[in-house]
Length: 451
Image (tube, rainbow, N blue to C red; front, side, top):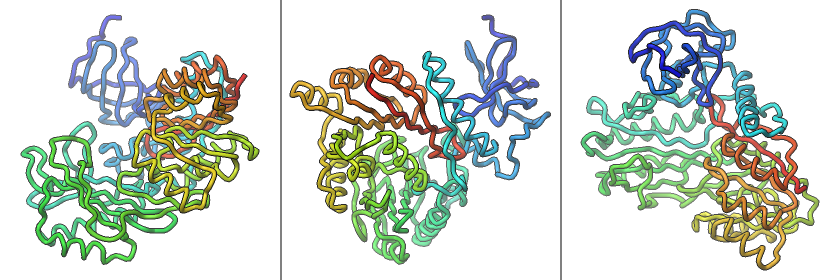
């Protein structure tokens, strides 16, 4: 295909045909694809070309000439510009259809005939996040919180983050003002100077308990005892940490985590169980939808009380422990040692006697079991975005669990993995669960039954 005569900074009129998996409008110019920011299917836009590659390019809409009936105008487009809520310009009912469609498209590409049910959405798709990691910068001589402009390190000052628990937004401002009072400096990324890089706030939805982590470039913060006392003066704040991150890196946390005040953890609940959450714990960020996701996963497993269940990528044990009262035995497998300790502690807190947790890669543990003829009735997998390792799929084919439940956060790797597993499993349907409204992230649950 010859590249059409399009150059960077050209202004052109485009008709939008589709949405990409990132939520960008898709337009064609003589078979050349352009991905267009802030554009929806059915719209005609005047756009400026921002980048031209060999087989596709990017553009940004300057003016909407014909507007889609699905466009939302009453949400400030700062949320799309910062990437906090890239789908906030699309009507929520259409966001749910978009997510269902993305999974179906990936199945079609892989030649899979699997039904995709309607996406389970939220009544209120805003203010749901129970965790915030907000960058802190020195702006005009003042410590400032906000979020980055998309694809940049330019901080846009913000006070309302739209998709976060409003109590978290308020807490970030309270902490910001305490730090300003004591003349603590925000991070200067360009010159690698200043002090506070990030404020992390977690708020447990069901208990209201808050944890705050100040991520600092330096160890010594003057008045830190006074700062800690003022932060802890709030009834909801139960835990305050200082994390030291001296490196030039985009990774938020450094290795060293110091408890400044309060408890080392906060407690929250999922499906009647209590969980201890420490600063590094992986814990789902949408509390109400997590209940739906886990309940759906449990339902797909169709447990009778006689099954041995393996919870792969078990983290702090949330899915496995949610299934324990319906299974004979649950074994969680997790590669992070601290998470395994947390999971075992969570089992103890909830007086769950039929669950244990082991450190290791799931494929290694399953291979060891297959050598020793240890059977698995139900395998629950909830892998990271890269999906299941090929070696794990080989292990699954080896040990042949009677049923599998696949919780996925990436439709592309889900489809790839299901294609490989369909050799030995029947797969009838998948159900998307909208864990991240206003964003293009897609979570889903799929049940598999051994042929």
